[in-house]
Image 1 (cartoon, rainbow, N blue to C red):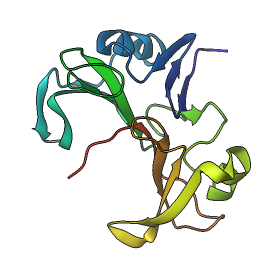
Image 2: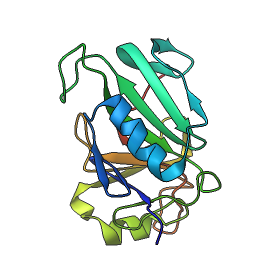
Image 3: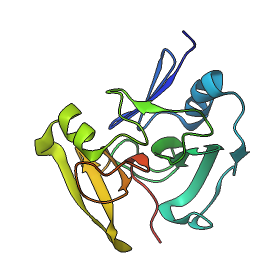
Image 4: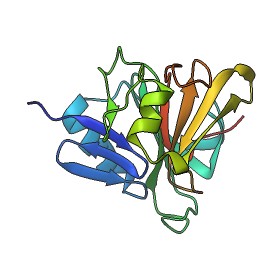
Length: 173
């Protein structure tokens, strides 16, 4: 079986390598690259307020493998003091490319919110309407200031499907 990428509420499993939030940015990219190949985009270090919204300052590095996006900062987080470049979040929004990536508990895009509740501790799951559209669902699991998974779904019911899986801290608008 070829190495796989698995998403979790504390980071990414890249083949045999565990890439936790706080992991060195270059080591994170290398671990994922060993499984998925070269990234389709690497911004290098840029201003945290720009094309990706309002991200964790002062500098941001975004590395993309098509629909899998990793976020890195050199600012203070719960993981490191400022000045240390490290991984702090990810987004995954499309199973077409890279191919179907799932959580460590086998939840993926297209799984239902009912699947999510049956797989993870329902006491740690919140399902609500998305701030931008009350018809869209927003879900989170084990949400803490710097860990957790979250994303969007086609609605808020058990039969609605997950459309994105994100982890750690994201960027705002």
